Length: 296
Image 1 (tube, rainbow, N blue to C red):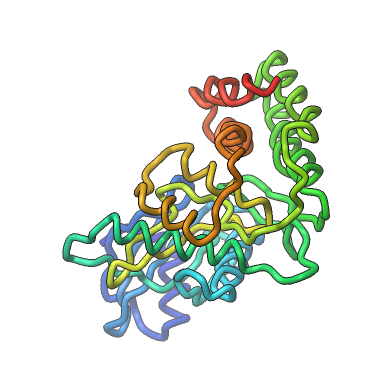
Image 2 (cartoon, one colour; image 1 turned 90 degrees about the horizontal axis):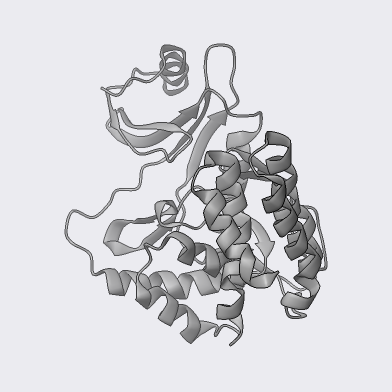
């Protein structure tokens, strides 16, 4: 059995009204621990975090529910969640997504993912602004989502600027790198087109945050949802790779990108790279400076 903390195991036993029959290892991402569990013949996915700030899993649940409401792409159902309580860590109980036993055609999967991602991005209503109706987290870091009508201002102040302030406080960047990012921020009005059309974004879309679900269908997990410009989401998917080429082809067939997007790709990777600098440091500083350099 995977070692689930005893206070959490007790809490689950009380909630189910029955003991856990078995548990086994599951991947919980880079910041959480996780297990698959079985109770009463049913299987669930459980993750927990002893260091999670208050509201951490509630924010994830809100993000998943927001994506589900768009009815564009599958996300797992969320069942129960709690903040840390004494010795019991914060935890989230979810639907267990069963991956196919048979080999999946990745190009066909990619086409479906691209079509559904485009539909997700289009899931906004007239009058929607950038931001969200609540703040949340990207990884373990806070992510503010105030309502804004200007994408340039939102990106500058609440994405790049917020993470740069955090990097400065933590001493994660040297003064020269900070100055380079500040020069980039000052140039954003000249670098980005006058396009204030929001899209509903997963917000943390790298290859570890999608799954191949039953029937080979795409499933999105671990979101950092907000309404932003869709190009930042596409740029994020290209930062670390791991997405089939067919995804991009299918996306463009549904909602073609602006021809100038390739020139902005590195710029839009600055935000996730700052997040990684603040979370992990190391080589991400070099990658950040490489992304900033063409624009200053």
